[in-house]
Image (cartoon, rainbow, N blue to C red; front, side, top):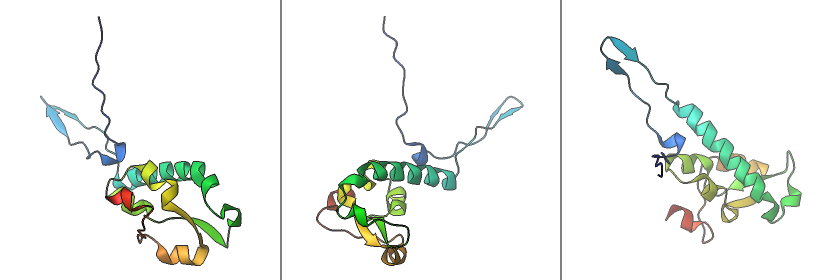
Length: 121
């Protein structure tokens, strides 16, 4: 006899907040994950995956606190808003080294080239 269980594979940041259900004079409130918390979970996961791929980035040895930084060509925020999987945003084709000032100016803007075009297609 095999036991089959339904598994929900929807990412936690993609789920809508649950609403109140009333059952015969008993109010059941299920906790919902806030938008802010779900974005921080997404961002944390992307950065963990990015650190795993960082050894493959060209000029990674230039990385320092105030000079060069890892840049996501397609920003983490854009990936979250458009439901792009975290490992696509953390993929090596979406990473580059950029000086700190330029990275701060770029902010949440998106830089698309031939290497990372597949992510948004």
